[in-house]
View 1 (cartoon, one colour):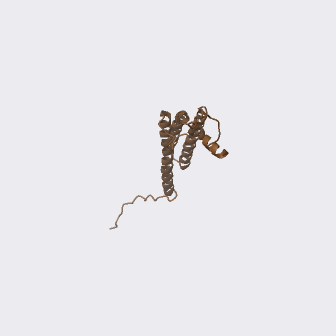
View 2 (view 1 turned 90 degrees about the horizontal axis):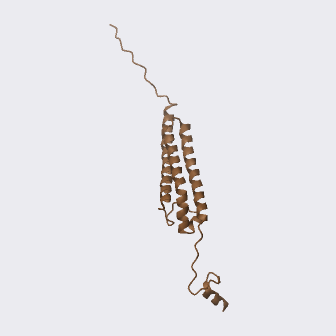
View 3 (view 1 turned 120 degrees about the horizontal axis):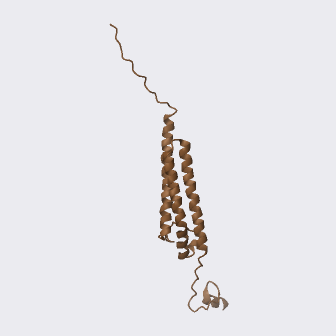
Length: 167
């Protein structure tokens, strides 16, 4: 008797052109989503802290221009003004990261992440420019004159230094 065998369905072979492409897409997607969402979360947190007046000049966050740093009032005002745009920049960047996570193509992932990062950075930069302009309106603090000085502007050494130099 002849032995009959059941026909096996053909094995689906992995297409070598698509498998590495999916791995690359997944790796690029994860890296760009983490970068974009992390950047957005950082901007949002700094924006919220600045808006609420919780940033200090001793720290490293916030609007840190010369005009903003010359007084505590100027620093607080600059960060209160720049806080809402920084918060919006954080939301825009996180939205770009979410879009990058949901887009099915590599090009879409890259474009979504770049738009999210660039949009967040540009909005935050515009906010810090507004904050710097607001800080420019705060008058510079007056330096206290040394005791016994009548304000004659005799130099950085004070009146005693001018008397010693003249003798």
